[in-house]
Length: 197
Image (cartoon, rainbow, N blue to C red):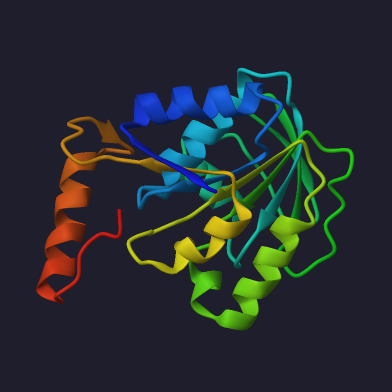
């Protein structure tokens, strides 16, 4: 049964560190719609462990370096099929629809997964890859996460960590986090919907 936690960013960081230091469980889903903050939390928590060799599976397309720049890692020059050092971590990059060689990796990050979950065929590819991960730790990170699709991953995940930025009066990348959440909640309410967590 999946364990679900909802915490402010600082406590989410602490719980992620606990997960990374524990031998079991080995699969975690990081939810929340401030994806750059979530990626930053993951990379900073990994830095505090002995886990330093990883694979990042880019679920979607786009400029990989730009993802890291938005998360506060300006010096990253990354591309699909390449290798780079991020925050002292050695990371290889591949695409979600490739065969993933993570057998000798300390961690395997799937990011971002949100859009892939909207299509059943794509979602099955991502779920299959998560199930077949041989890395010590598998970390799945959502983006713009304010729908129920990520719940489809729950049967394949040990822990869900929701990064809660409501009433969190700090900024990240010059954005007030609590205001981001308020805006999302207002937009959902206007459509007759609400946050799923």
